[in-house]
Image: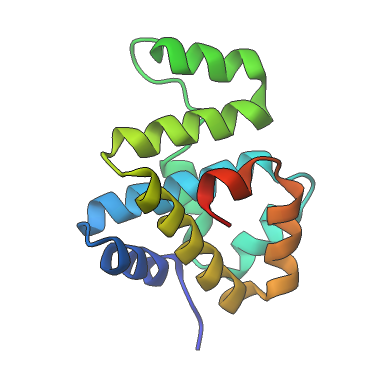
Length: 140
C-alpha cells in the first residue's frame, strides 16, 4: 500500500483533532522545513516516496517572502540563513496556525511515522539526524 501526503494530512488532522486545512498547512510547513534544511539529495529521496509531498512543501514554503516584508521573524530567519531560517520561519508559521507546542510535536511525529512507512526508516532517520534542532522542535 502506497502512502501519499494526503494520507499524512488525514492522520495529522485526526490525531490533533483539527480540520484538514490546518493539518495540511502544518504538514506542508514541516515538509518545507525538511526540504530547506536537509542537505544534498536526502529530502529528494523522501519526497520521491511520498506522492504530493513536494507540491505541498512548495505551497507552504517557509522561505517564501510574505507580502508586507514578513516582520521580525522573517528578518530573523533571513539573517540566520536558509537552513536555520527555515526552522525559525517554520515554527513561526506553525504557531501562527494556533497550534500548541504539543500539537506541533505530534504533527511532526505523525509525519515522520508515515514517512518511515513510505520511504523506509533508514532514509527518514538520516534526514532527521541531518537537521539540527529538528528533533527538539518536532518532538522526534
